[in-house]
Every structure is written in C-alpha cells, then in structure tokens.
Image 1: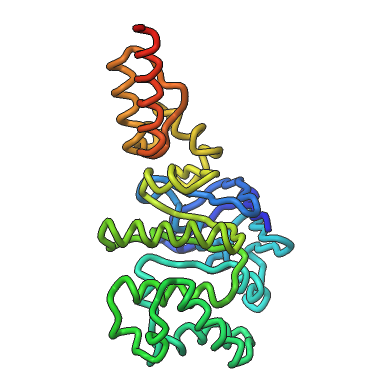
Image 2: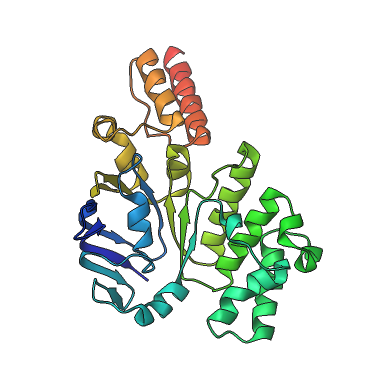
Length: 291
C-alpha cells in the first residue's frame, strides 16, 4: 500500500494569533513494503508529518493518499476509521498508553473497538505475546507489574493487534538502555520482514536510519528536502550538514580512514559490520600490491 503526500501543508492554530506553519509543500512517496526512515533536526516537521499518516492531523493544504483512501482538510472523522486500522503508530514511550487491568485485555482493547470478535481478539493477543518474546503467563498479569522493556512490548502488541499494513514508529527506543534499544529495533526489523509491513521510522539516530532503512526522507523547516536510499543520502555530507544533520558513526570513521590511507574505500559503509569488511578488503589489497 503506497503512501503519498501531495503538496501537503499544515498550520497549527490556523486563523488565530498563534498560527504557526509546520509543513509546507511536502511532496513525497513512501513505497509499499519499504522501510522508510524520516530524519531531521528538532522542529523540522517530522512528528507533524507522522500524525498525517493515519489522520490524527488533516492537512491544511494538499492531499495525503494512503492506498485508495484520500485525506484532505475536508475529510470527516468517520471516514478515517479504516485508515487508522491499516496504519498503526507506536509513539514515544508507548507504555504510557497502557491502562487495562491485564496484559491480555490491553492488547484486546483496540481490535474489539474496531469490531473484532472477543475470541479472535484474545487469539491475537496470545499470538502477539509469543511473537514479541514475552512469557505466556504475562497475559493475566497487570501491565504495570512488568519491567519497562516488557511494558513497551505489550504496548507494541496492542498496535500490532489491529494487523496494520503500515507500522509507524516515532522514536520507539526513547528512554531505553543500549541493549533494550537494540532488542526493540531488531524486533521491528524482524516484524517488517516476516509480516510484510510498510515500516516508517521517525528517528534522530543516523545509525538506526543507516542500518535498517532502504528509503529515506529528510525534513528541514517543514519541507521534504532530500529523498533516496541511505547510501545516496549519507553520501552528501555537505548537504546534510546544511540541514544540521550528521553522518552515522561508521561513515564518520570511514571518512577519517580514507584520509589516512589517501584513497576512498570501494563503497559507503553504513554499519560497523560493513566498515570492518571494507577495511579488511582494503588491507588485503594493500598487502597484495606490496608483494
């Protein structure tokens, strides 16, 4: 299910003394099945763009096209129900949205609210508990008795229980330690592959964007200013710097290494693993030339 924004603009506080433009002329396409990272400095419009993807906000100008559904400023709330079923959003600190007395009920709440029969919702809840690596006995526990990492997985299960076609992630590892961050990001990557999801990651982490995404959108001052694959985006260091964005650590190290050896490596290394392989290859080639 492709998603496109066609000349989308958005004003907060429209027609009031506090009017502020957050988006202007955003014109991008998110291909079906892609893992798209949206990056940009604070205030660039990332979060406002995110909220247009399932109708939490409606554009002040332009059209948001999600599959066959169009969202414009005239779209009525009742017409957004199917869009919100297809597009699930995991916000920062999703565990703050937990409220039911048991994990099972919390995961079941959303699907039942959309008309899924109780037994089917219960079946989904238990399938997701297993899928997300939680112990089976958490189903009858209060979500508030779980660890922080487990609570986050329960909250994610509540979004996945809708069986969305599109999963939108808004800084989903905020507040987690490095191990928890890696576990959650690997979980989303596995779900992306196994569930054939279109995944959209809004992030400040250049490392996560480089490692997981195959498509990127760069936001700056409410506009979409760059799109393309990670190698294309991160190859343009000067342009990224003009938007107050840096490079992944692996690319930063690569640039320093290239200056040391006086020549470029044969490819851009987006991860530490790719960098290690590229350096090892350069060392082998240097050894062959010295023989």
